[in-house]
Structure formats: C-alpha cells, structure tokens
Length: 210
Image 1 (cartoon, rainbow, N blue to C red):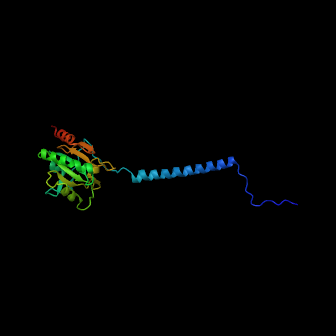
Image 2: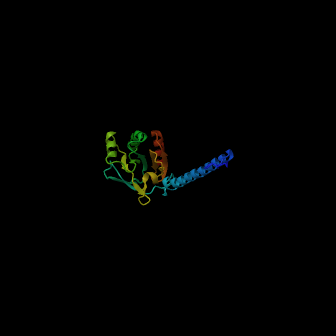
Image 3: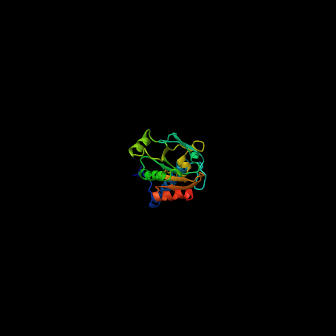
C-alpha cells in the first residue's frame, strides 16, 4: 500500500534556531525601547524641561529697576529706585510654605531695627488665589509689620519673566529665596533656602559696608 503524506506537518525547529529567533526578537525589542527612550529624552529636554532663555541677574550684577504691586503700602506699588541709597532685602515666599512663613518675623524685625537704612520686601510668588495673601497676613497677625508685603509679577525682559526667576530663582522653584541689594542696586547676596536671623543681619550689614 502506498504511504500517504502527512498533511500540515510542521517543520522541526532545532534548539539553535529557537535561540537565534529569540535573540533576534530581543534585539528588535531593545532597539525599539532605545528609540522610545531617545525620543522621550529629546522631547523632555528640548520642550518640557528646557531652561528658559532669559537674563538672570546674579551676585555682583546691578538689578534693573522694577515696579510691583503691594499689599500694605500706601502707594499700592513699590518701585526699586525709590529705595536709592538703602539696602534692599527681597524675600520670596508663598502662603503654604512652612519655612517661608517661619522666617518672615525676623525679616520684619530687621526692618524695624534699621528703618532708615533698609527696605524689606516680602514678595509672594506669582498668581496666588484671590484674597489668599491678605488672609494669610491677617491670620498671622502681620498687619502692623513695617516690612512691605508685595506681589511678584512678570516684570523683567519686557514682561515675560518674574522677579523671582530674573533674580536667580531656579526653574524648579524652591522657596524661600532671599536677595540683598546694596545702596546702588548691586546684588550682594542670593540665598536659596531659609536664612537664619544672624546670617541675614550679617549680610545686610555687609551690604551697608558696616
């Protein structure tokens, strides 16, 4: 009897061929993953986390003039050049920043100690909720403070950069930050993070040349 061929018989695959196919699949997968990672990195670093292109004024630079709105100043605004001849202390904060809130009293104490020599500005970060800053000032009992509570805004580089970032605030937005200017508006100190009272006074006296 003639032997009939077995239909649909699968060809035998050796172990070597299976390993070769698996390695090929792994190679293709690795290239695909590498491509995805590369594309993500290009998008992230060029568009998402790209450092903003603007001038940052650092220690030793002269701070340009600016005007910002205030919360407890009769003039309702503050202009830097109105403080000519004085040391200017700019402290950047926001209402829910614990370290920021904790250090504000000793900034005000320094303003009261040297009323004729310095102007202290406590500057809230951009875009607070309506009424948020005033409520915090009232809740903390700061309404009688001599330091000026002010509002950060986009004031540098034709209105595209906040005071915070223009004076060295990192893109990661850590708070608080303190910037001290001498009587000629030169930046004498930039302090990222909390600033103890003794360090603050020492930096102010140095800016006074005392």
